[in-house]
Length: 144
Image (tube, rainbow, N blue to C red; front, side):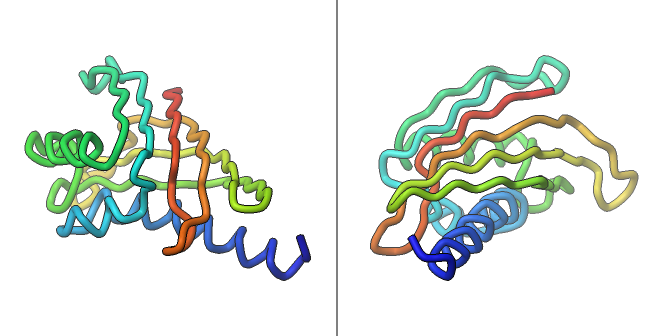
């Protein structure tokens, strides 16, 4: 792969990861958020006892929609909850139409009043190039 195409793919994947975080926190239209994922995407979260969040492993947009809808319903995250996902130190590797990215994340709550770190961890992501651009195909989350 030439350097210009690799740089363009790297930038597109970084933007994808940023939009996943942004849209989880403030995008009212859940369908715009879900469009960032492949149809068969997998989301694996080990749970977080400190925040009283159970482990979750979901496959496909419908399951991700149900999981995100529940998180919004309970006020855990989403528009109006005062939460932000901060994604940092992203390292991307692209091989053709597949890519991986490793990054650290910080989940902050009470951002409008007294911002506080609720949790921190690592994302290990796989992306796939689609006709609509790069999409998140598999996310494995590690807390701590």
